[in-house]
Length: 134
Image (cartoon, rainbow, N blue to C red; front, side, top):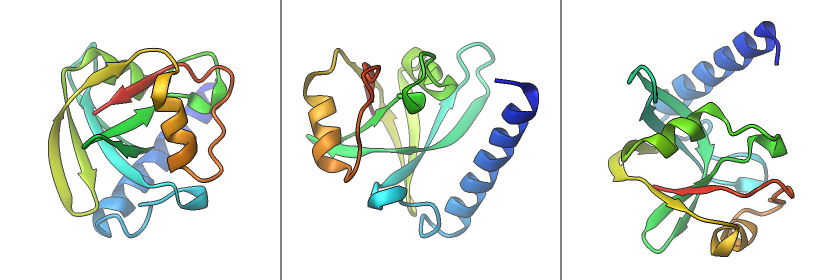
């Protein structure tokens, strides 16, 4: 990905986070097809600087499950790499703020079937192989 695209994506992410927070999740609280979105804040794995990103999620057994598919690309998204290295994260669900423990789900297991049933229209790519429970 070239530098201009990265800057554009970073700016779009910042705007999405701003709108979500300003509206308590009314703007940006759901993605295409009604998929719910939360704000996930985790420290950078190298710098420790907190980074916030909007991510789709579904609820499973009292927790929140997010998947790091990066649109089916081979690379994990940076937020997922940071989350995998963290033991704790901060979640914003509308006006609610929660500090959560991080747990890695292995393999495709029930997490992918949960995503299919919880996210209308969600089609995990063949590369969807990683999920993170928060």
